[in-house]
Image (cartoon, rainbow, N blue to C red):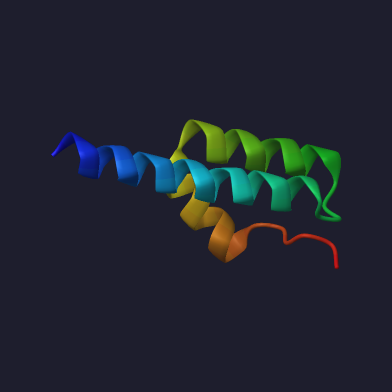
Length: 60
């Protein structure tokens, strides 16, 4: 059972790192970037889901 939770935790970590990199490379203002990064760090699952639907995307 701990292997399943370990894999789940690793997947959440990878998704959160991806979200943070995308947030930092977006064109959003610095204040918005900080708020999104803090949200993803404090609430890893809910913050990622909120970013996925409402957050700034990476600049293309």
